[in-house]
Figure (cartoon, rainbow, N blue to C red):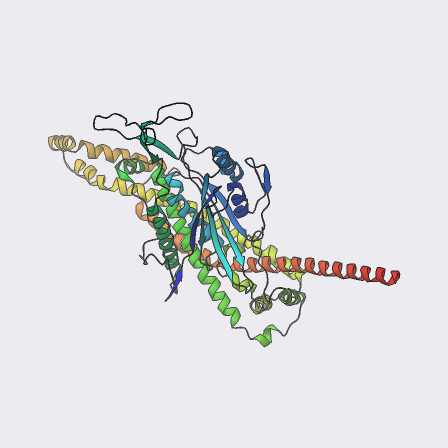
Length: 528
């Protein structure tokens, strides 16, 4: 088993000379979001250097933050304007390496959960952007940039001070004068106000070294947990300061007695909503595992096609693959920004391999881009049908799952109802008096379940509900396989269309350059 070091670089963005994470928060946000931004503090407009590697950009806000801060330009301009000191610290920046085997959708879900748990739930405003770049050797580098605010936000949505003064008191509880040793008199400020001994107290503990260690540790545990669920155990991620713990990727949080009681009554709580989000994220991860396995099997089947067979038929699509590979280090390019289906694929590097894509074209029987377009329309319709079916199944699953969860709360009180009606006369009345609370709960939870059952038939049938859930799970397994096969074809179409368009652009530029050179040479000849 190989051990892979997780690259996690945290820096401070600020105006001071020692700040290595940039000197302008708006500029840093522009860089990671690949978006042009204007900074109100220095009056400059910042232009991103790149744009083709952006996978996802998102701002996440804590409870009290103003809604307009969801726009990164508004958020970081607010940060810039609240800081008046020349050496002010503006934001914490954090760069995280991610497994290249992850699909874009999986990376987004995992990092969204990671950022929420570690930063947003603690009161920070956070912006994260996922990039997928490629070096000169064709090696991909999936990574995430995170920007975090340093000030807390109060209940009115206003920035709080980073720290406040706490006066040092003597044994009698009185403030101690701050004495100037040169004059032996109490110090005064510029407004001639007396100064007292005090210590600065941080408003929050976000600068704690323990936090930095905790964030790195959680990242490693999260990556290893996801990889374990996906069956990708050939690499173990760890930071050199920590050992692998093997913790679950996204454990559910403790509800507590009050939230549990409300949830049992069908009332949604904030903590319950968090757990539901975690459950949905884990479902996405399991779906991604199926997608990964299918894509891997398809890749192996493509490799099994003899090269002689693949090269026997010549067509315009193959010509585009060859010509594009000549101009791009023997590899195809990926449409990262506009890759609607490619982002669902884990093994994206295989779509850059010339031989693999050539075999894929032959396996599909494509000979021209006209056939190519017909196939695209067919598979897009198939994808939409499968997606609609999966969404319908998801709704049905949630419906029956909710009924069963409510039944678990109702079930313990059924015996009291049966025992009540098994008795007669005085014995029944005595039993009803002794178990008044249980019998009341029986009525309450029975009525609650019936209110959630759709249609006219209000019978409580837990076994039938479980059968429906098992049926949906079986259907979803088959749907996932069909969906991944469809997605793999559509992703290949996206890559080939993107490379055809890019090749046309390159050829036009080359022709334009030749025409310009010829024009220059003609002018020289005429002059001579």
